[in-house]
Length: 427
Image (cartoon, rainbow, N blue to C red; front, side, top):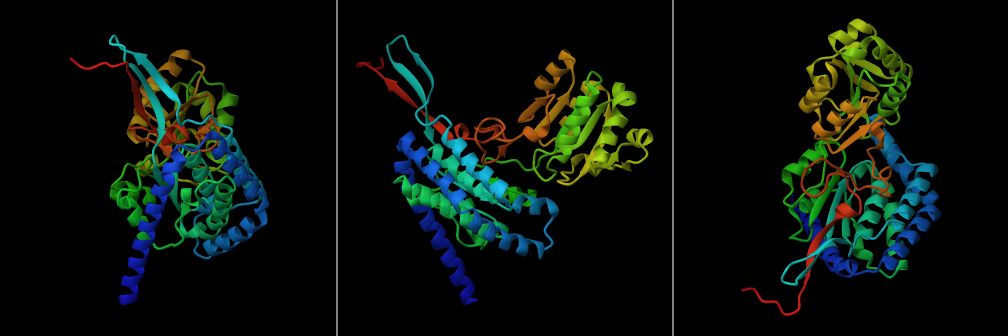
């Protein structure tokens, strides 16, 4: 019992020290030049490529440990690294270096009749805590994005990716040191004790300004429930594809299969297909046959099962299930109005896609659905910061305060007002 108490005390002390170090590092980071930050990022990318073998060896240990725990296939896919994924990770860091530096950007400016000149200017948030599981690439993405936006970051990866994340983190620190920036600008929690997460959610005595969780439903739910600081997050990715009667059939088949099957374990994977009843005779079966041929299980409403007997009857829970697997629920709806109604009832406000050529349908879809990302004639799998031109993302936010959609460098800043006068006093 005494050992357990001592261990928890050690974790509390460790996290408190990390908070202090992050806050200390955030001051010089906030005024670091674009050149300094980019030099660090490019050195990080070089180090990641140079350490490919070491990262792969660390990942092999994580994959072996995960396989022994019967981890779900979707999580194994997120955990796995290979040479191609490591190269993509390094390229993502380089892409972030190529982005415009948001810090100091003048968002708006105006003058008042009394001669005062106003500017709204982007500033770093300060210290960001990132809590994630399985995805070791988040170590690089989050570290690089926070640095580019002038923020210090504390990374807490899951125990399943402990070795992989550690190997990647060493590359990030070497990049910081090469550029003469504080090594504590990007810290990684070195212990797997869940108490460390609890301490981060408390805010580390005011050191952490915002928390970003990236992982499964249980992790995100805990963060949203317990955090005492603001959170950028989404709980689930219940993404929909709606095929309108005006949709091009070949396009509908290609987009739906890609949206569901390209990578089934990501939050942007489609989980529900909605088909306009006016297109049921022409589009439904061909699209379902394409999904089935790609290895997808179909769970259909009564009308869908009548048209496509190979489908498994869906129950009420299927419309609100994030499968993260090669399974899709399918319903026939009464046009765009029916699609909007279904999405409004079941969506997690993450990402929805419309396949249609009718401009009036497109306008209703874009105006009446309140999800973070809406796509027309494109796959839901584009719900990714890299695909948005952000270089990478630290996560997807579905809330309505501050950040929404992919959280990139701009979303990792706040703003302040600079007001210049010439002696004005207020009457």
